[in-house]
Length: 246
Image 1: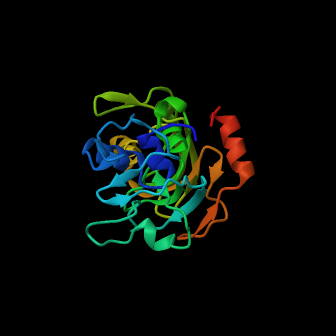
Image 2: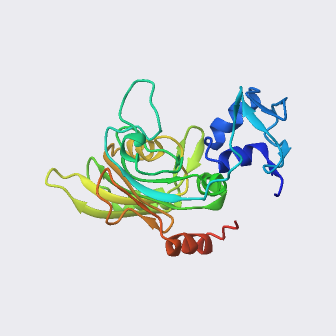
């Protein structure tokens, strides 16, 4: 069997997310053939080496890579567990047999598309801004968003936390009865609360936020609180559009 970095093997085995696995390796929680290893890049042979955490041996069976789209409801934590006992993604995906992890996050008061997978390489590809994977959101903001503001957010951007942030697209969808706006926005950035910060800074605080698309992967047809598997055609199209190499 081909040799792999310890971190990559543990991620591919569904043992944990990239961040979790790396942290545990750095803390020296794993040993290979009886020797403690704290280097995530340590090379192993999954077919021969014995990898353990404590006294428990980790099975040397790489999981099939799987991909699901989940429609997260409001009031749900976009992690697999929560120390405060709040509802999490885990409560909705118990029928998924593989150990999957969310790609990026949506905060407690946001809703919509979360990609779930055990493919660590694709996860890193999507969340890295340098790969320019667009994330699309439908948001309800206070007040009416002017054409001049839309143009400014795309062409000039705004300064947040000491740096300039621009949106890929801003499209007015409709006006509410209370003279507020539904707006469709797209961006590459994935920083925490970034859309809420941009529109609050621009004088239009966000009342609702729903992610509806990542790349070509869409939330369309998935009820709130439900999920479906990504089709091979969708995945192939994503890889082609964004030049992703397995």
